[in-house]
Length: 480
Image (cartoon, rainbow, N blue to C red; front, side):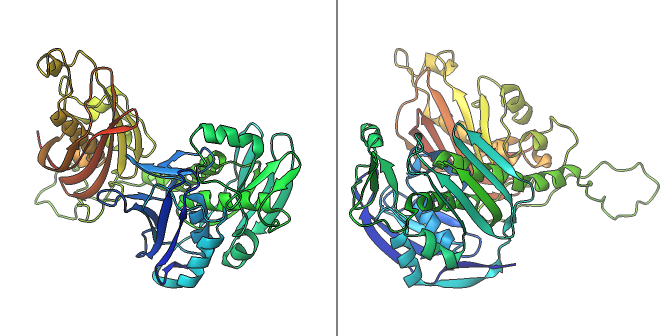
């Protein structure tokens, strides 16, 4: 099994962002084993991080954007491709703006600074994911598929809608081929696309210094093409960067016809779903834990299955332990990755009831993160006095919503079912905008620590994509 790798030294680069057009500085930092690749916004309070994982994909219009709560990082694919292409598993990408510098439109400069910084092997191994069953996706003229293979190979055909500049290329992707065959391929666009991009506030930093423009049958560029098939090679570069969001090396043959960032990231999500299936199956069919090996003083009835009381270590939270249950309506079965919960299912998990139930629906569960929705209506009883003629949802109720949503994740452990979540503390609380009747309050919570019945979580409430409140909360689960 191969070892994990990180950078030997810090690598830095500065330039202009493609879509924002602002100056940005980037630093690639070494990271411990198991970190993966994370983007850190040093220009924001608290230097928040967004992990390079498919679940954080927020937008794929002309580039790949990652988001975690209100924190976004745009155009991540070229940096991710350079790190993965070089064989780096763990790194922190520090940015002082919302996107990396575009450089010359390829990954060449990122590959250069990585090469100069050097790589170092780490003591922990990493197991590549081997594709065992083919996966296929198609949408319009786009086709993506992945098949079993003994290495990572990409075969791609690219063209525009009219079939112009059709190119084909196929290559094994590894540190030996990456720099020679893919890293220098620049991004490109067709002239008729530019007006649309500008009208939508994109490519403010775009120029012939960092992109190739195709006008009819002419190629506009400030230097000769770097490869005969530069366009399709850049498409493969994007595929390598977007599939980095799987989080592990791949043993697979990817076949793509007219790929896009949306298709690439959808394929990454499909691969992740395939990776999880054996784990979910093992959890489903695992036998119950053995009863304690204690000899009774006299014959006694067979004891009920004991609750699993293993405590989660005090460290950044992983996915809460999932106890096996044969009841499909039990909390540990309802609260699973990929699940959504309606109001009736939420009330089977939480002991709270209207008017103090602050969760109408759970829209996403993924590992240690959960997203829920609260529809704020004029029928809420607190609006009668807060405030007459100017109704605003109390900030403390938004805090309560964060605690309730975090409590749902804690209920993944069967022994916690039916307990109450008591507030212990709230820190770094900020209320940014009022919440009014008619708003849809999105509650995005990530568990940061969990020890037994004590939980810590970071919660962000938003309306129409804008943060209205945020806090770090600590709560305790107790028996009713």
